[in-house]
Image (tube, rainbow, N blue to C red; front, side, top):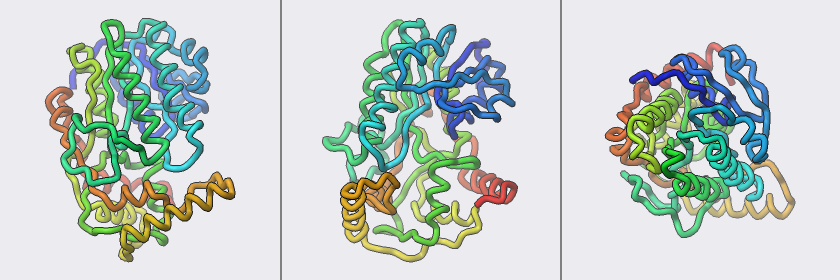
Length: 336
């Protein structure tokens, strides 16, 4: 990976799982790194990162934080499959609009935006899908809908002044994961195989996802003609989704998932739980939703030839090596 000149770089959500991994790579390359997050993170302080506390939906705070910055990695987002649409819209859409505006007002030339493959998910199998896949007519979660709106705003903002690249990393996992891995491990004894056991999915190990962001920044500066481009980022190694889940469970010392239920049964359970939780205004995520049922029962793997060709992206860490690192992390941290 070619070293670029020293820059002052800001990462939104720098204390999050992906944000922190990107920050580490940037610090290792000698850049001056700032993080914009709602919280203060001791681990970022230890890396020498300047931390700015603020809400991404506060336009003035974002604009002020971006002063003097040369490149922005916009990683901050509200993830998940449950919650009020307004909360997702405020963070994912208004937050991204504020990032774009702050880049423009501060004459920042480069923006790398983290999106999600879920923006093109239509509830059906996605096998070898590339970046030409259209947005669905109907979105199945507030997260996917608001992330789709956000990435369209970034694409539209791409011009001579502001160069952008949008990345869609799929199911990021690894040590320190605070989203996907805990969801799987916490529900280990309650999980059922949904639908076919052979459904394929591709994921991306955390270090590979972070590397893709650095490569995107490098290549965008080398070739501004890439501006406005979108790229799927994965391990480039689809495997049965339940094999992947069971490898993560094994890393955590949990037994594998062996029980199964038909997709239609799980989908109906998800519908019932959604209605129940909404009727009683329960904020906690239901054990199952229709969106989760569809994701578990359908294939999700993507053609990443564009990322290979344009960005020079190839995953450095294999699934097997990633699982070894995750296993070691569980043992060292006595998690769970």
